[in-house]
Length: 299
Image 1 (cartoon, rainbow, N blue to C red):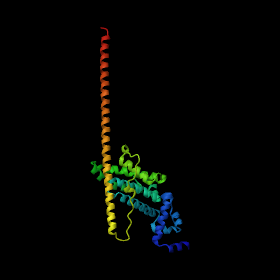
Image 2 (image 1 turned 90 degrees about the vertical axis):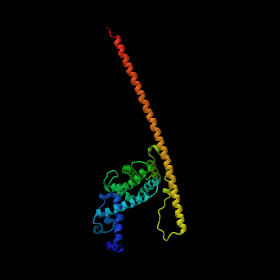
Image 3 (image 1 turned 30 degrees about the vertical axis):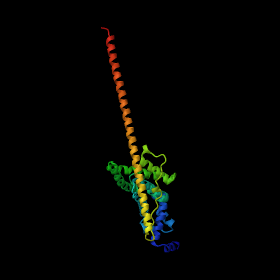
């Protein structure tokens, strides 16, 4: 009787959404193998045939849950990669992943529970591969602009996305430090490299202050359009400043690298010269010893 009343209160679509929410929580807590149709039905206070009617079985509801989580995360990452400047793309992508982990912990646990980012199989690996393909396009353009071989973009895309994804898995449980600080350190390593690490990295204002654009209930006024245009101009100017600063830092890093390379070459040359002098001195000593041995031998 209770089940009949519950059915009357909920439409088919409402019941389906309820089952998806319940299954999402159970899959996050226990994984696919640890969750049963009986448990899903009991939690929703319906019979097993109701679950079968909507999804055909546990595999069906699991597929729906996983697909929704993958699309949600992929949408957030794709939006982040739409920024104009490469540094902003990287910052916003890292922030998007950490925001998803923070706000959709159950969903992220489902994605990573039954597969590992480095395994090459499973739902999370598929998601990582899809994100890496988008990052690959971004890196190919950046490589071409900087004079690097764009054919190397796929390798760097896998390394970059893998680093961010594995950091996200670690942060899922520790949650310290905060997501902005974690993102700042991720970008610090990815953007500057080990030799140019910033001692006190921070996310740029463009990424930190980004607010999602909400639908307007009415057409924008001329004043709002002017303000929006000014905001876009400010963002473009800020992005250009960042680009120029990064170019200068990159140039300084190249100069330092060249100087270090020259220093190492000089040291190597000096070492070769010392070895050659030692070899020559040893040869002379051996020659002198041979002459003395001939003199000492009785006739």
